[in-house]
Image (cartoon, rainbow, N blue to C red; front, top):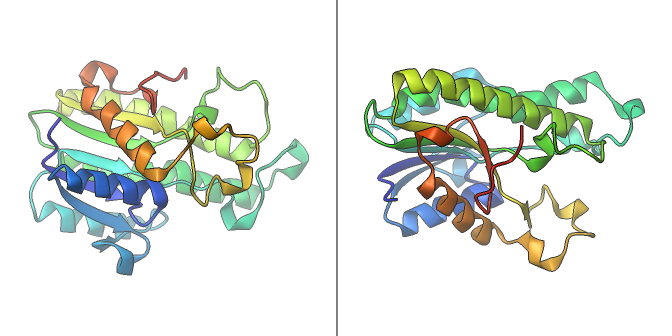
Length: 232
């Protein structure tokens, strides 16, 4: 797939930066957005809708986008460890992780989906996680992260249904990047086999290969780095 113009939200992070680098190597005009404006082209804050709207307006000046990737996510909001028990549940922590992992990407979709072309293939994707699968949850724990990613998956599915009516050639999906050697996963890598711990560059290449092959029939799904569809 030849991507012409892309926006990567979260481009100052490990996976987001690697995705932006990979797209640029393909010759795609790539707009980098992150909360840290100095590190990217435009500033965007997923907890501030006016910031998201402003970033979308800036991107719109250059024309349509055929790829939008939300490469953001948080596992330990405010430094709190993932919950191992219901005793660890905290309302403020839950609200923050939902704001960053679910509500934020949904608001990005609100303002960026209108920038996709009305005709022709285009993709909106957000980083999800296999642990957001309700059917695949056999270990428990990590309440906030699991629930916020499950919520993200439902939001993407619902967005995909509406998107199909307005832009029938477009695709809206969640992506599971695998366990990637970034700050998010570093405290939890001890038991990860070496061949299952990916560099950001490896993960980015795999995710783009997945996106290359998706078509409108795949819209609303969640796909792993190897192309496997993840159960809801």
